[in-house]
Length: 216
Image 1 (cartoon, one colour):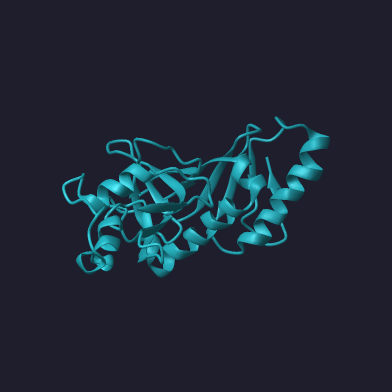
Image 2: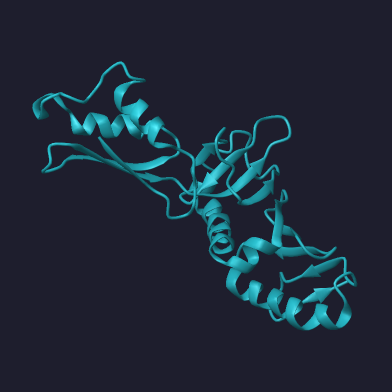
């Protein structure tokens, strides 16, 4: 067997050995030496996709007679902090993923609110949750904001706030609308206000309202 795991986002949630174990049911059903007619490729794909960290699997026969396996991993973009339960990841499609024993994704943590139901499942899938998912995707794709934003909180009214890695201020973002415009205003705050006024001058910066940056 030839196993290839897509690692575009430098995730290491699943190994070649774990894929092989899924294919062979922990070694109980060996594939080596079987004839092609005795190998159900679709069934093998389904076995691999039972792993939560596998987004997609493709199993095919090569001209060399070998079985070729290609695995695409899911991509976490946030981690929900749950005080009385184990934390979970949110993937790029809004799905819920468990934590991994072998790898910890460097993604923004979200402190829970009453807006996210106890099970978390489904929140990021509906029309309201999709706007929060788009916000998380924006942060994940921007190197500066991914590095600078240390924590995200969603309050009961659905308003977002952030704690930064650098600085003592809280960023009040409001609802996840006009995301790009708000981050442009926030960048002005970082580039033009803080260098002249000092990084510890303000405790609160609000970019919720159009054409305004409120600093206190």
